[in-house]
Image 1 (tube, rainbow, N blue to C red):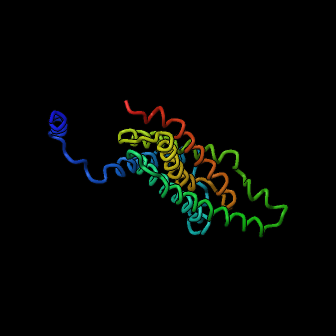
Image 2 (cartoon, rainbow, N blue to C red):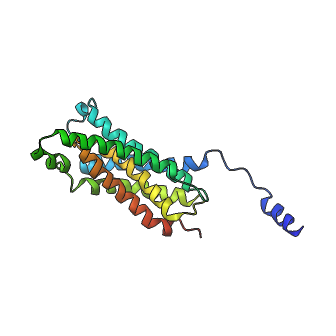
Image 3 (cartoon, rainbow, N blue to C red):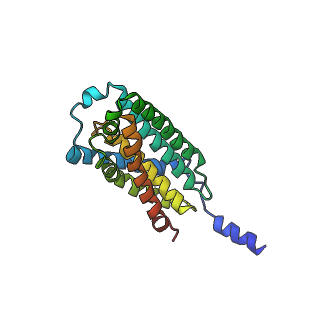
Length: 214
C-alpha cells in the first residue's frame, strides 16, 4: 500500500511527453549544425567552382545520396539509442547497405580503368584532407546531437555516442559535397567513409562522458 501511494505521489501532476519529442530533438542538431558547416565551407573551404554544372551530373548526386543515407542511418540509430535499451540494428543495416553498394560500384569502376590509372582514381587529389575536413564540418552537429541524446534516456552510451557521430558525419558530408570536386566512387567509398567513421569514433569516445546520467 505504501508503495502504491509513493508511485501515485511521484506521478501526480505529470503530463504526457510531447509526441515525436525524441526525433525532433535530434533533428534540431542538424537544423543548426548544417548551416554552421555551410558557413565553414563558404568562408574557409570554398564552394567548388563548377558547382552549377556539377549538380546536373550523376556523380554529384551519387555522393550526395550516399551522404544522405549515412545521415539517415545515423539519425535512425541515435533516435533508437536515445531510449532505454534501444537497438540500432535497422540504422546499422542501412549504413552497411549503402556502403556495400558504393564499394561495389567503386570496384567495378576501378576494374574498368587502366591499371596505371587505378591508384590515382582511388586517392584522387584530396585524400589527405578529405577525412579531416568532414570531421571538422561534423563537429557542430556532433556536439548538438550529443546534447540532444543526453537530454533523453540513453543507456548504451558508447553506441549512442557513435550513432550521434554517424549522424553528424553524414550531415557534414552532405555539406562537404558542395566543396569537394572528387567524383570517383572508390574515392568516396574510402575517404568520405573514413571522415564519417572518424566522427562516429569521436562520438563513441565522448559518449560515456557526455551522455552519462547525473
